[in-house]
Amino acid sequence: QVQLVESGGDLVQPGGSLRLSCAASGLTPDYYAIVWFRQAPGKEREGVSCITTDGGRTYYTESVKGRFTISIDKGKGTVYLQMNSLEPEDTAVYSCATSRFSIADGCYSDENEAWGQGTQVTVSS
Image 1 (spheres, rainbow, N blue to C red):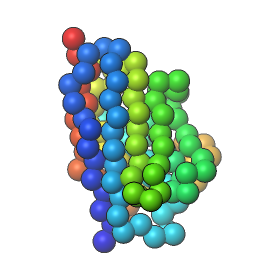
Image 2 (image 1 turned 120 degrees about the vertical axis):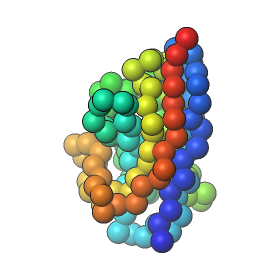
Image 3 (image 1 turned 30 degrees about the vertical axis):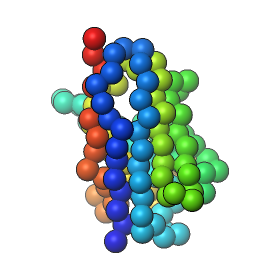
């Protein structure tokens, strides 16, 4: 019933930029936020950034502050992640997910939430 579809992943050189999109449909007031996660081989999935579904609040993990910007187009039901000054360490599969949790101290989701299939971001020279 809730569907999330990511797009925008690509191969980019260090220092380059990408904009990821998460198209969400079927959301209800039960979903407080949308979260961008990423997972690289051998690493745990981490919450990168999140935004409340009304667009009023955002959160960024320390490693992307100043480089990434999350936004939402409520009319389109789409969440964007603008990624600038990309580094090889940003290479990962990026996924978006719904969240019923507060984002005051981080971005959280779990297996009971809706998840997209992910989009590959590769930063390499």
